[in-house]
Image (cartoon, chains in turn green, brown):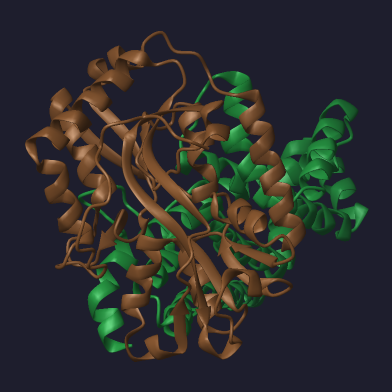
Length: 232
Length: 277
């Protein structure tokens, strides 16, 4: 195990960089972070659109969510990379294909969490905000959404953690993220699959567990602040 | 798992049918870009694999690609591909050339053009000793492992129609499955089997390479269909390598005594782009 780490640690962390494309854990992290950063706001927008009083907003977003929920991510990635360019004649790059698929996919799932959160808050909240003179969007932004995000944090974190793990599906289009690299190292070493995949598993665990703990800390921190405010 | 694999193979077939975009002259495009993108496997020692020290992809296929880039006086960029993605990536123009342990056969000629044959290898089966299999026909009804999307699977099905074939994403995964007893045999090109066998160390005593060839595989570089100018440059480069003795040196560098494979003689010359089957 020690010589395995000793020989391959740098390849595992950054792939061929700087002699070739960036890969390995670094690429996985970049994908996951950008995925979360873009998916969350898009998910919020989709979530609000899902409960919008206007049909022309509600329907297209609902259709998109149903389609996304009804297809496996692996197939969407594959399709976007190999099939779409042969229709459009426009070749897309591996990284952006993967990131776009991740963002659209996760935004759809996040939207449903947000929708559940909005519908879980009493109608009275919107009504009182509106009667105090808030516009619909201001009522959403200032009254409803802050409560939604706080209540739904555990579910949101679930989805964020899933995003990190979904980056591993990039192997299908030859994206050299950390699982691709691990498989390659395994092919090269050939006699130590248990060790290679144990290290890979540990890596994902550390990433996901780290995010969960951070979210937990955030939740507690928020609670204390709210309590402090209430007492003040 | 199985359903997913079928789905993917089906999609790949669909993609291949739809085909790629037409280009005026690829060679001119490559020269204008100042860069040739060559698709390699990166998982198939000694044709193309990652050198852990430098973290660069090296191998016989890579050296051929380098010679072509040198001849054109442009930069070489390698792109790693999965076995099943090789031909779609070439057809869609994401890579300019394939140097990816690609078998040249008649069936594939409909989709890709091939360079002169750069290597000839038999395809063989390595079996676990405890299976007591000593000849290819004895694989009937048994589980045999290999990679998906290559010629290994159809060749095996032709040789032993009743064998139960299990396929994996990379040859390495299939070989690990063999070590774990998930099947009795594993099919691959002889050179790759020899390289894998060498890595087993003391465990070599538990495995035997069956002497018969399932097939003879001429390997070649893949070029997008209808690009005569590019094909000419590639073939000219290969002919020059053969004439100068450089091709023979490359053969012994990767397959000779200093390698894990230890071939003593070179059973072919780079001279023809015709195949029998």
